Image (cartoon, rainbow, N blue to C red; front, side, top):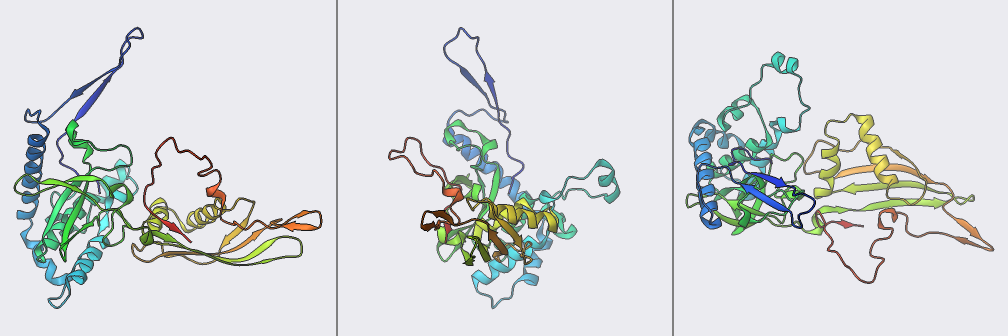
Amino acid sequence: MEATNIPSFQTEDFMPPENELKARVDFIYQDDFSETVPDKFWKHVGKNGMILWKALWESAKPWRAAVGQIVAPSDTPEVKLRKIYDRVQTIRNTSYELRKTEQEEKRVKEKPPENVEELWKRGYGDGGNLTWLFLGLVRAAGFEAYGCWVADRRSYFFVPQTMETQKLNSNVVLVKVNGKDVYFDPGAAYTPFAMLMWAETGTPGLRLDKDGGGWIQTTLPLSSESKTPRTAKLKLTDTGDLEGKLTITYTGLDAMRPRLENHTSDEVERKKFLEDDLKSQIPAAVEAELTNKPEWASSEAPLVAEFDIKIPGWVSNAGKRAMLPVGIFAATEKRIFEHANRVHPIYFSIPLREN
């Protein structure tokens, strides 16, 4: 989730006169110290980050007792982690709420919590602080865990040598589980347990510790963790139409996508979204109607959408023969990999699997 309290950094792009052959980029560093060596720079940033985290931790001793209310001594480590994760995700996340007007803010009289203790007492907070709350709870539960600032790869690729602190703009939690590094971000809504939102996967980050931290690389999920199987039972009519029942099951990070895009939508808008999403997958005009009520609120449960569909004129006559396309869901695959040689690299958000 978006992190706060990171030292600021600013760039200014200088556009030269037309008669100059080369463009110039001036970097302006804004910080409370002057350092030009990247390793020393990031050590300083890491130590400052740990100081900020310790301030949150030490000012929030009362909520350590909350761990005893969430987990049981007999729980296995994974069960403890899952219970804490689920509990944090039930807290109201203000990062995903519609922005209030000035009049609404005055009416509700809500102030942002100043630390995680206040967040726990008030029962609401932004996504970044919810993730830090999770870190405090899992450490209080006895886990070896670290806060990490990571680079969100939606808009850029992070390069440590440029010393751009503002590009480490997301925070996640690294937990040692059975000797393995497992990453969590409960402050990112609808993120499944032990997974990260796609922009935080496979990206560099700075682990915070008392020695100034160290560089980490978050893991990429397996394609099997974000499967989208489609199961259809269809029949061909005498007029060449194809009709029947279809079920699409979104799982993992592929289920997170529609939930995030529709977290403020009503039932009518969500229904239209799923029907339009299905229509975009079929390379023909299609009549589709959602017939069930998918589970929109969960981070873990698959998002299952059931449809009645009809594809008019799916079969075309060719003399004495009838031509029947076999690729029903092939619209998004049109013109993919049609050239023998690949000139540019291909960039995927997440590994996923369609069945």
